[in-house]
Length: 335
Image (cartoon, rainbow, N blue to C red):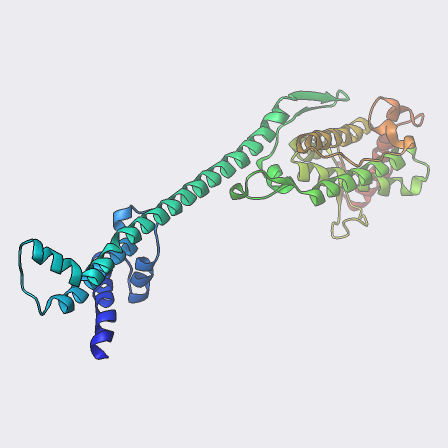
């Protein structure tokens, strides 16, 4: 029984030991064992520990079983000797012959692993290229628009801030083509609606006690839009022209003062139209249908010059000349 166990285990242990010493990698026994029993597509076939294991094991089994089969025989180099050798070596030769199909199997499996790895690498590269191409196309798309002047008071050079792509499209470079961030698009539509409502209420100037609040809320919404969309012509240029009014609004109660979008009706409406136009272009690029349901009574804000004829005076200018001027004087911030 002991001899049988030794015959079964010893060749396997020796072949594993030789492979462990000469064809394995790792800092400890577990890592080197895992290296032997695993195929590595990044390495050549001759560096696969498993290949050497399936070659050495049949050879050692051949020698082990052959030793037992040949020990009662001598060497006879003639036809009778070869015939006797074949008769007594059926099992050793059968075990030795296993080296060929097993090594072929390992070769095929290694080739399959390499093909899968190559496909994975190509797929990864394609995903990176697709993501970068989509990002670059966004920049190129807006560059086609060029410079546009709004209401003769501000010129906009439609350029995309790199952060815009990250904010409005979901996914990573390894995942390929990014998908639109629907929540981000809806947030912009909500801000546009807030700004439009505030502008309409400001221009109509029906409730003069509330007009300042409407105006400041509209300004705040427009600045939020400009920051989210990355429009420096609004959050830098028009902000420089604006006035810091010492008033609070419900939307941003943490602010002690609210900055106005410039100081004129033209600048307020132009800023809104810039943000709206920028957003519509972004939707067009993302193949998203915008949900900007503008009421009929507020469509005059989007296009044309009727916004300046809502009243026989310009309400934004009225606010700056009266209410805002008074508020600044009370706070000691008047120019």
